[in-house]
Amino acid sequence: MTITTSISSVSEWDTCHRKAYYSSHSWGLGYSTMYERDSLAIGSLYHHAMKLVANGKPAHEALTLTGMAQESIWNTYNTRPNDADNILDTFAGLAVAHLKWQASDKSRYSDANLEVITVEEYIRFPMEDYEFTFVCDKIVRHKPTGVLMPFEYKTGKYPEQTEAGLPWDLQPRFYCYAVSKLFDEPVPGVLYEFIRATNPNKINILKDGLPSQALATLTGTTYEIYNETLVECAKRYCAPEWYPPAKRKYNSVEEIMVAYQPTLEKFQNRVDPIFWRRPHWVTQEEQEGAARDMLAAAKEIEVGRQLGADVRPTGLNRSACNAWGGCPYKSPCLVHGQGGDFEGVLKSDFIKNKIRLTDYEGKEI
Image (cartoon, rainbow, N blue to C red; front, side, top):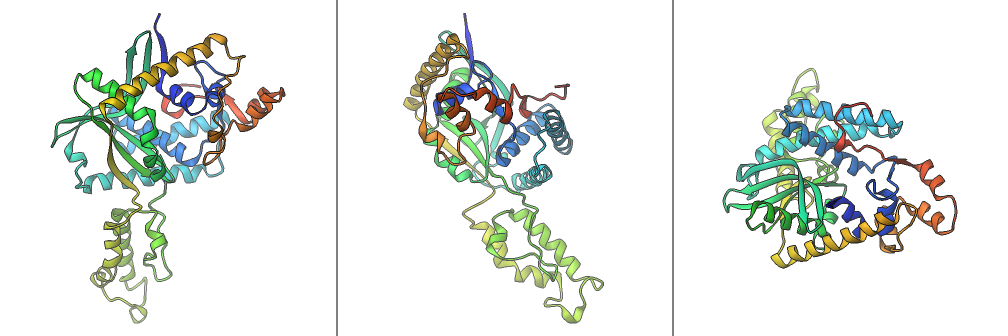
């Protein structure tokens, strides 16, 4: 008999056995948090929109349908967060800025240098008596080198932290191994696109109607969006009905653009961009080691599955308890260990078998 397990389940198990026990839908208790962090919610919106685009929807329609799907899930579970409008506005602003950035990107791994093989592909990869499932955001081929690579989007408030943690992440190593075997050719790494969860349209406009040139303003937007905003503001600034000529510091759009040139140049050398792509290289030894680790973890999970949901795993990763943002299952885990009503805690603060946006197909929940 083939035992199916998802890569995400193994990743949860790898992080903390008990966290996986409380959250896993396949073998554990299946409780999800009512509210996702904003960055996670935005990441889910991105993946849902990508799936729609891959199925032939135009980009603008995909954005609209994705927002409607998220609203539907919030309404179904009565979990609409207070900042829901801000989340949707940030997602829409990011998506539009992303398209403009892609169109202007001239880097080594720009869209022009990539051949897209698959998008949001559901992959089943067999090893021994197990079948590992995962959704690969994209599989691409780098045209200049002919190299085949999985392509993954990572969205977060501080994506630099995600990038810094990749050498210890089991997932990219296993992705390389699986894709290499499925396509029967070497796969030397994963191409990552990092997305900072910020609304690029929130540019501070000064009293004179022109955008601020303060460095703090530049961290939340892109060159393309800032430049467009500057041009629009400059045209309005020079209109007689907007700003009296006698009070103007600048007399033409051209003068304004020259004055703002140093600010625009800062975008070219910024160290905290909103979007960037970078390959994460993985050696053959690391790939084979990941396959062994993945199989060992799957076997451990299967032991837990056989014991049933009434038996809590003994493995506890205390560093995960105190990681950035904290573990959401910390309270029920503590109550459980003290013999208290941990399921009562779970039922009050979590949702059992909650549908995820990336699994939403527009059907009644």
